[in-house]
Structure formats: structure tokens, C-alpha cells
Length: 134
Image 1: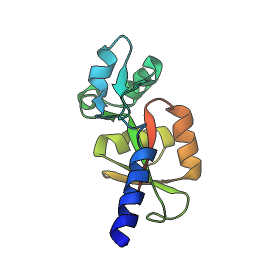
Image 2 (image 1 turned 180 degrees about the horizontal axis):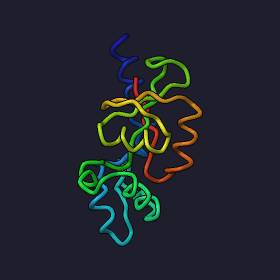
Image 3 (image 1 turned 120 degrees about the vertical axis):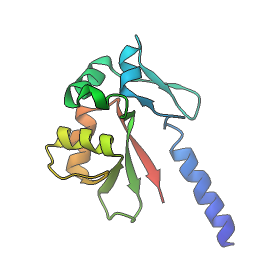
């Protein structure tokens, strides 16, 4: 029975995450595109605002533009991090989030809370996405 429950839950998570990119694209490549976009798991296209990409580019040295993968995922997990807590991972992705939120810590993992998530999504609505995990 436990195996069946896991499969059902796994299928639900896949369904909830169908809005995520099939593969994320680096900032440098997206800046070169006339209409920057990523292809989503459901086959549709997600358009990224050029102004937003330029804003991200201004936050990072040019040498990092090739390393940041977009969209930046804000990982939500039921109970794993605590209520109202999300995780951002990736050294350069965390650097972007820290600069937007005015945080000073370092590392390739960053935990943020509801007010931070709201601010981040307001500042970067097309270059960030929620990702649901167990």
C-alpha cells in the first residue's frame, strides 16, 4: 500500500511542477535572444521579460552571466523546511537572491521566508518560479 501511495504522491508532484522548465537557460544566452523564453515541461513557452534579465545582469559581474540558470527555483516543501520557509540553491542563483533581498550570508543554499518570497517574486516575476518537493 505504501508503494501505491508514494506513486500517487509522486504523480501529483509531477503535475504540480509541470510549469517548470524542461531545462534552465543561462542568463548570457537569454540576453542575446530577441524574445527570451524557456520551454516548459508541459511543452508551452515561458517568456522572460528582457528588462528583468537586464536587471539580473546588472546585479552580477559579467563573468557570472554564463553560470546563472534561469528561472531561479524557489523550492517549497511540505514540512521539510518548516512552515513558510523555502530554499534556493546554486551558488550564483543564491547570490542573485541575496542581492535582491539585501542579505549578507554566503553559500550555495539559502533559506528564505514568506515576506522574502513575496519581495523576490515581485522583483523577479518572470525569472523565478516555485518548485514543489517532498
